[in-house]
Length: 195
Image 1 (cartoon, rainbow, N blue to C red):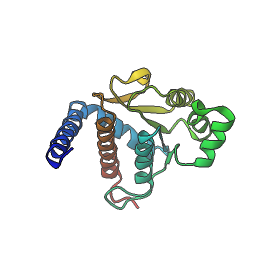
Image 2: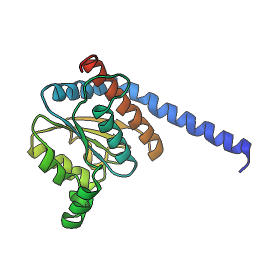
Image 3: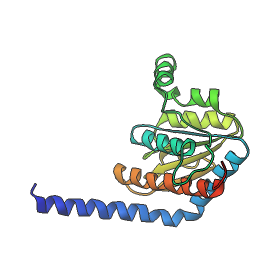
Image 4: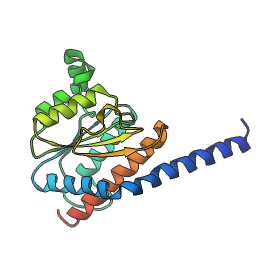
């Protein structure tokens, strides 16, 4: 592949990414509802739990660390735990209970009624995420699902869901990254100046 054809392919990928991200505007009210519910949970003394597999695990990590640290501005640290972050917990649970229990076991131990769980999945097909959702339901937690394609088996199961339409995993993940930043903007606007 020469530079010209590589440049053409890159322009096509950039255009596809732009269109996918732009499609989020159709769900702006739902995105705002998720962000405001997260603010309510945090104000009520709850925390955020996040989970995902592979690239979606990176989104889960990113969302949690920005709440504990900061996104754009200084404000008080907010409680958030990425359930993908502790390799000792993941290997212990995976070894003793199986991969499908990686997140549900942590929700059972860490989750409370005031908390919110955000799940990231480009397909909605992961049994470990469905099990985490069911564990959160038993704890009466709020659940938001950031999904892709048609939402898969997770579609319709959360209190909130944002489904990024499309078949390209990379484009869905890029849109999920934007969703994370939109959530963080809502939270930081709500907690601005609180130290």
